[in-house]
Image (cartoon, rainbow, N blue to C red; front, side, top):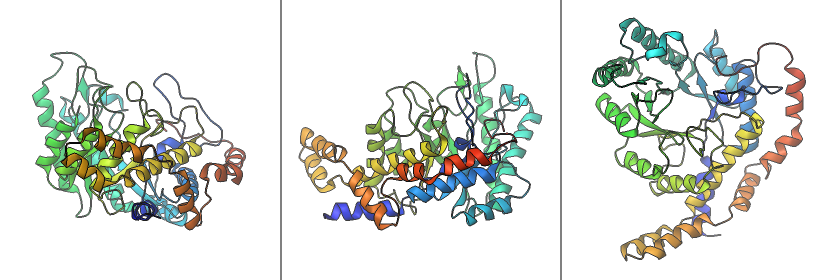
Length: 389
């Protein structure tokens, strides 16, 4: 076994991929949410389903919450429940895009009362971080405008900066603010945080505890996402990912399903810097919408897709790659990268799972467990969790 293979197994054994609680509920597009049987009815049941993903992959030990979708009376009890299941509460995601008050924006709204309401929610999310032991607060704002002249672009940036500064000041010593950006939708003339440059500028001004989140579906077609990854890594401002796949826009499909080569290219930039493991300071999160596929298997497959892309990135012969690059050997350098990408790493991962005491085939093991049939029978009555619930 080569040194690269041994190193790949060592890094993969420690890799952690955070699951989104909302992907276990009923979710979908803005046209239709298709309800499924057995979906969780509350955050406690969401955590139970997330624990299944971790049980069969060994790589999904944390779960991101979305507030107020995951609101409970006792967050310490929720964190204790997670610990009992062998997982933990991860990133706390805010929601300032569903209330009627936010039609013209939240933290960028022209009305100070609406901005105050949104800010209070963000501060509440930090309180939840304190109660659950979470270290990351992720902010995505639907704020923007639909028409030229609707509002002052510059004033909206000032309002955003003011709110971010207040929230930043509330963070504890070991907590971070992760700012996400989105090119368009729901606002179509301007989004107030439309790109990585805007997010970076705000985070740079805030300080070292503010970093940028890359959602892989939030870019214009043809955008070189790995370039953005490399730039933010270089500046020490890459805080995390929302992994998903897209064909056209913010499709929120399973990561690695639409363009697995792009996922490999992203992981290659990260592997080059040695920031794939849990000590990297980068939160590797899924952000997906399982509209037609079963929720738990969809998450298991997604984790496996990230693992496969990571394994291939770790198998790149970096010595040969550097030599070809230094020599100006364009085709040779590309061939080194493609050799790694075209490597079938499924047997390597199956071997690693066996060494970890896991089933070599997580999808088959979950299907054979009977858990899906059990929750369909047990979760009768009540309100199924979903977008807005």
